[in-house]
Image 1 (cartoon, rainbow, N blue to C red):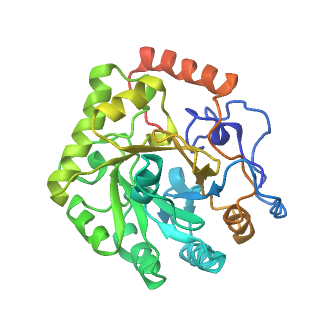
Image 2: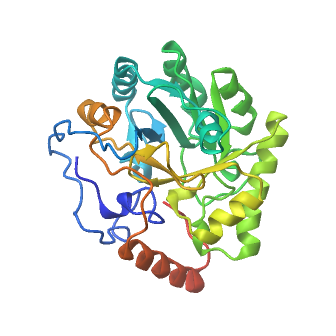
Length: 308
């Protein structure tokens, strides 16, 4: 399925945008009615690793997240495709161990990740994963789920911080998705440190152990953001890029495939075959870099903005 430019480019985010996020990058928008592309030959330069990015699983989501919400029926079909693929489901720590040189990867790994912390996650979504013995990684926006917290996320049914430990009992690994879900690459050093360190501390206090992994809101990052993420104590960070990851990917911008409501089981099967998307790592393109500078200029005028 064809993807928007901003899904493919790094620092561009996770494609949640409306008019403003129609920034150019070459191939045009997704056509919801377009049939899935046939399974193509996997990229042989680096073994492809599909890292799926989900947000919410529900039938009637708020409008702002609807495009990136799948129904329970769709989700079940996706999970069944993962099981049929014969890939080895892992959490982000397995990828971290490989990229740090501590351990080899299992045969044909696949990762399922969830951003933000919507209310379905510790309930029917976790149950659907557990029924198939599929581990996952959940990146939580602490300002949206902690008591008295504040975030830039629009209104939506969210889980509570108290249920984070419950996710671990279901076999999920917990990572940070910052405090407010701001565009990290537009923030001052002080605000960036707050987003990275405070969210980590809040989750560690709730879980009683170290939190080592981060997901950039909307995928937005930069060399400075990546360096500060490492200094804040994170061992990996996932971006978006709407690309396949690989065993040679970068620890602080691991590529993910953002799952839209319009994606079909055939799309999922294509990605599981290691096809249908570019394979990371690769360099940012000029349009990605230009988009980043545009957003920074906006932030200087308007202040921190929602990454979504």
